[in-house]
Image 1 (cartoon, rainbow, N blue to C red):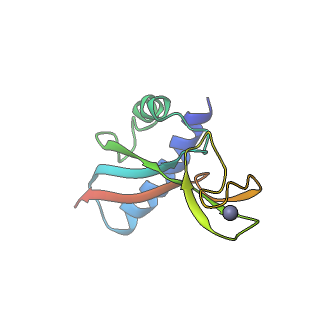
Image 2 (image 1 turned 45 degrees about the horizontal axis):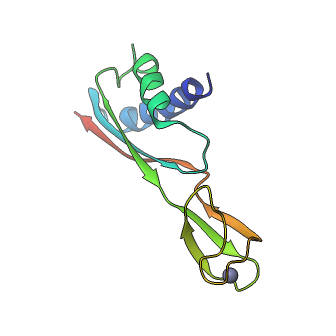
Image 3 (image 1 turned 135 degrees about the horizontal axis):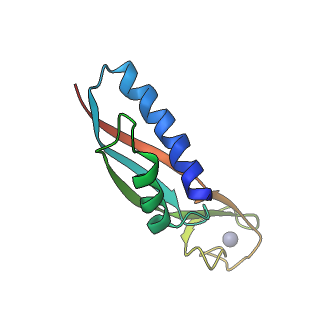
Length: 114
Ligand SMILES: [Zn+2]
């Protein structure tokens, strides 16, 4: 399960942050999931409940924020936010674009209890 390994990677980062800050527990984890990351938020949520067991984040809430999809046009050079199923330049309609945002999964913040 793809989402489970993502959660485990995430929890390793969270564990590191918690240790560095002498946390007793982790309350909340906020992440941003890009529209092209291939990650299904509902599956991620479910995988997180499994992955968090026995970790410092065993009672933590996972907040998932949808990240924008941004493309940069190869023709006119403009950057535009687009729907993930329509990757064309919003200014000139060009389809030769580079995705500059949307494939990432970012850890935004970790709330801890010390
Ligand atoms: Zn363009």
